[in-house]
Length: 144
Image (cartoon, rainbow, N blue to C red; front, side, top):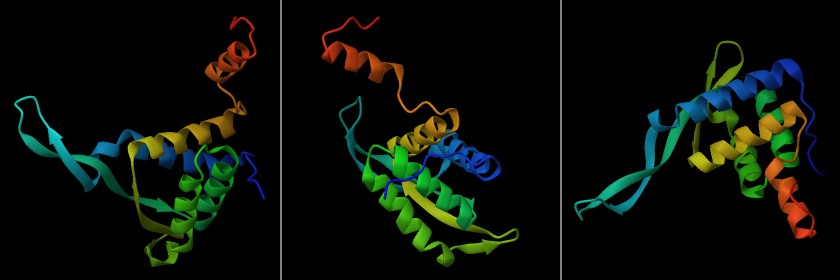
C-alpha cells in the first residue's frame, strides 16, 4: 500500500524541523564511515563520508515520516531504513515528554532526500520545475 503524503500540521512541522536541523548540522555528527582519499599533496588520507547523529523522536513522528517517505521518496532503501529505526525505537533512550533519543546514521544525500520529500509534502508540489521541463523536452515540446 503506497504511503499518504498528507501533511498533519503540528506533528509533521516538528518532524521537518528535526530533519532540517539534522541536515544543517550534518558535519557536526560523530564520524561513522570513512574511505581512503588522495589529497592535493598526493598523500592518502581517510576522508569521512558518513556521520551519525542522536536525534529525539516520538514514535508518532516517525510513523508520519515513514508514511510521507513511502509516498514521495525516490529510493525504497530510505523508507526501509526509517522502518528499521522505527521498529527498534524502544532500544533508544527514553526522555521526558515521550521522546526517544535514537542514533540516525545516514549519508548527507539521504538526509537531503528526506528533507526534500518533507518539503514536497508540506507545499503540496510533488513535481519540480526541472521534472516538468524534462518531460516536455522528451515529448518533443519546447521547455518554455
